[in-house]
Image 1 (cartoon, rainbow, N blue to C red):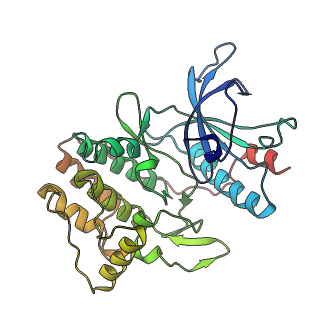
Image 2: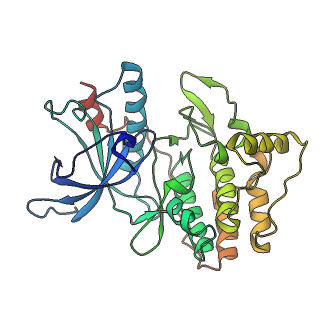
Image 3: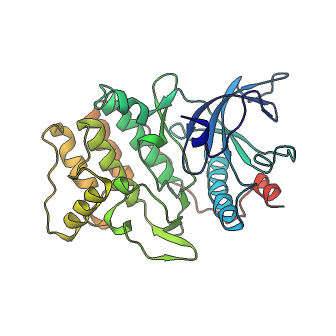
Length: 325
C-alpha cells in the first residue's frame, strides 16, 4: 500500500490523545487504519496497543463532509451502544485538533480493538483455509448478535471480518450499518456488489437512504460461505458486473443456481437457503446459526436473552458534534 492510496495519510509517530501512530494496517474507500501504541501512564480500560481508524470528517467538500460524517456517526453510534463477543470493540472516539496539519484537522478517530489481520488477507494466500468452517460459525454468531440488537451490517465481506490474536473472528467496519426501524433500516446507497442481494442491486433511494433488511446480511453470508469453502463466488463470471448480472437472472427465475461441486454437502443447503431469490425466503440469523454450528462441528453458542422494548434516545456522538463545529 503506497502513501497515495491512503484516504488519510498520517505520519509515523503522530500522536492523537494518548496514542502514537505506528504503521498503516489497511485503507478503504472512506478511512485508513493504523496500528498505535499507548503513551504516558497506564489508563484503566485501555490496552497497550490499539488500531486507530481515521475518517477525514474535517476536510473535503461540503457534500463529501456530510457523507463522511454520516458514516462516522453510524459507526460511533453502533460501537458506542453494543458490546458483543463477535463484534470489534471500540475503546474511544477522538477528534483531531491540529490546525497546523489541515489535512488531519477535524478528522474523527476511532480507537478500536487491535486485530492481527483480516479474512480477506487470509483468502488471498489460502483460498480455502482449513479454519474456514469455524470462522464461518463465528461470523454467523456475530450476525446473530448484531441483528438481535436491532442492527443490520450492510457490508459483510471478507475485508470486514477481522481475525484476532487467538485466530477468532470479529465483525468490523460498521459505517454502512443501520439501526432497524421495525422490519427495515435505512443505509447509505453504497455496498460491495458481489455481496449485495438482487433486491438491492438497483434499489429505490430516498432522502433517508436505501431500505435494507437483515436478510441482506444473510445473502452476503451465503456468498461469503461459498467463497470461503470453495475459493470461488457462487455466481459465474470473470467480472463483478458479470456475476451481478448472473445473480439478477437467477433472482428473476431465468437461470438456475449452480453451486460449486467443491462445496461440502453439509453446507450446500445452508448456502442455497441464504441465497434464496427473495428476502422472505431466507432464514434469519438466529435460524441460520444453529445449522452453521452443526455444519462446522463447533459447540453451540449461548442464546441471547429476549430484548425489552427500548426507549428512544438521541445518539451520543460527541466527537462528531465537535467535528461539525
